Image 1: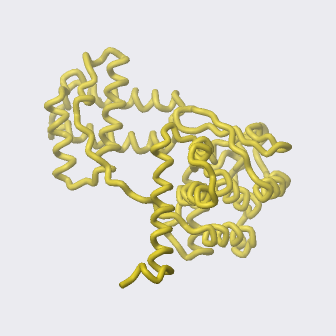
Image 2: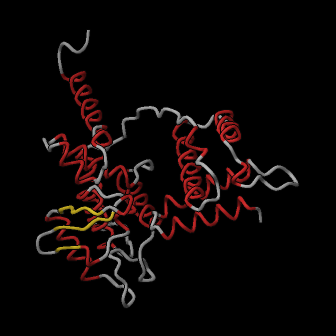
Image 3: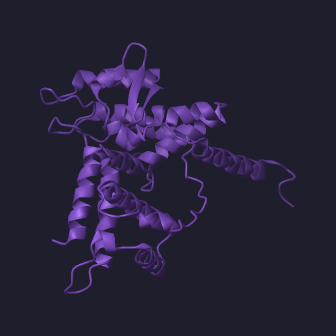
Length: 300
């Protein structure tokens, strides 16, 4: 195995020890595998990490543009390589982080697709109606109530433990990105669904996870996504709705009903207010749609 491949393996192991999300590790592993393949000519070993300088990295970056990858994909691959080289720098395997010299492509400003309050409530209520003979309906209802009612990321949801809940005062300790913790309240409907689920929850002895699978162990990120996908298709007839859509809906609906932007930032666990401000774009888009449809002067 080449020196570069070994270094990548060590870095991914370090990500695991730092409690990086399964989603992050999976994406970075894929991106770095492609990075390794680019620097692995036929019947020859790739260069050692210390030999990969800024000009070589610019050639690699150019190859991503040549493949017509979108800016979001390029930014993610570049982030993976920068983080990898920062690890190598800490390990004293390279003299500098040459990837820092690469220019990051600008990301297009995208307004997230958000279901309306009516659509979201129809979906969550549809889960509660238990029409589909699912094996763990109480779990699925609680899962949706927390995703929409608290605006959680899917990784945060599956990472919840029973002892993260203050059941009396209805607060949750949520572990977000970068191992940052925040306190998030939850409402009466989520509380009622949790009470029903906990009465039915069947877990292996000592399992702390709130949401468990058929084996009685922690529900995986992928398992939770499949649950959301199933109900979105069966209740709403929409394949494109995913867990993050419910997080978007949480923020957008709070903002539409007058919640303070900084309060929403705290609830979502955003490090920067600018990240939260994209929801103002959604609200403005909705307002323009209402204006164009309803105002007599909107049309010629």
